[in-house]
Image: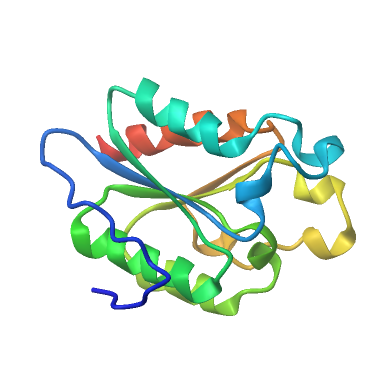
Length: 159
């Protein structure tokens, strides 16, 4: 278990229903306040809180971090605690982090890659995802509703 002060511990899931971690990387806490032409104007934090409340088939934990190491800690923590899936929006780390790719490859937990925008419709350096080859699947381009689709997929994977 992590002793890193940048990590807010995850709750141990109950066996009653699947547990899903929604994990967001750098700058995503500011969606709704920045670059609305790319990410839309819906604030992500309250949107995901409502999604978690409305999801009755699973328990959802939500975490945000600007730090690559914290994202890695959360991935291992979710596996150790018995979560059934992770929905990961790694933000800019999607295209740069070999460490995140190695972690996803190392864990048995299914990871679903999510993006609010459509990376292949943006700058060329965003066209390559280093994490995609190790994720169970990818969902992109549906705005914040990409998370709804990912939750449905995670619930299906947990059955």
